[in-house]
Length: 433
Image (cartoon, rainbow, N blue to C red; front, side, top):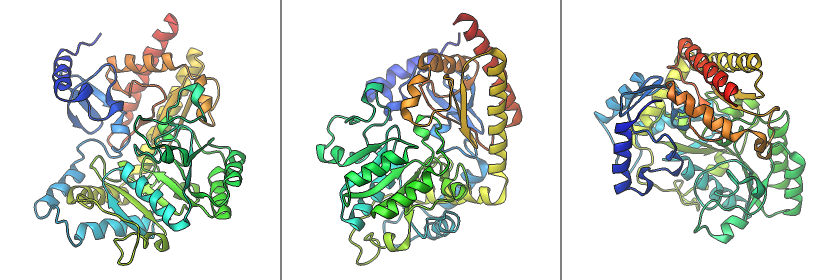
């Protein structure tokens, strides 16, 4: 058993000054580690333990921690600029140009600081454009912390599809104007549109629901959503905060060949630096009051800060000039293939899900198509397995149904070392189960 005396000591100190000692609720897990250093594919805790990192801060680190090219570009930018609160910077122009070049739906783009901000802006814009109030989201999908979307996320199994707000203090009107559908079920979506004809402003969807690991859209599902939104006069919003830039430089919309009206982006667009974006068709984006005469308010003191814009330019340049996606997709295939072989060899019932650089192992006997299927996953086994991997220097979030992410800094040796550790842990767990 690993010991974490310094982490435990610092955690007790953290709790004195912050409620729970963490600054995002989902970070409070066991073991509670205090991280002090990160480089490439590795993170280090206060006790000097090294881990191969697949948590990747929930996905931003597409290149790896403290990437020298990205950090260098940020340092270079801060040598001459920072934040002005007026006008436009050259970095904002350069980054906007890159995003509109690569992302199919992005005729124009605006920058903000978090994915939650981006989805908030996209939803408010949709309501202004359509004059309708209601919103469709999917059970299990996550689109940020605000009242519009903070319902029916990681619902208890008996709460699936029911009224399940994620927080105290939410406004009833916001909760009840958000309608919940089942992912991969076009009939359910169409029925919801039919029952609320003329009242739905937008449908927002993670094109791959990564909040619950990795549930792939079935053939025709995303194209079907596109058609339904067109037919019923609602905007289609792809929340690509996770999938954008991780699965393709043009986002998953480019992979799927389905173009939404609006797109939200974040995480992998800047390799760990804080920046997000909302993008879309020009005729819609012009409604924001950044355009003189626009009537949809868009503001934020830190929008377009040099740190985020420089980091994002550098990250996208790496994707343009180096085989980033080829590398992470190859390692993703190696991980999933190796893991399937191990599970088959050990006779453990499991489904290895994933796309590109992302994977997770559901301990159940079939491919999940939507959130309700995940109640068949052996959650106790899933979390215990991850905790035992941490003991062996492999860090994956020790929580149920969480995805893992591979970055450009990971090597084939890292994958092979991880597979070796996984086999040892699974063999041990099977013998004791």
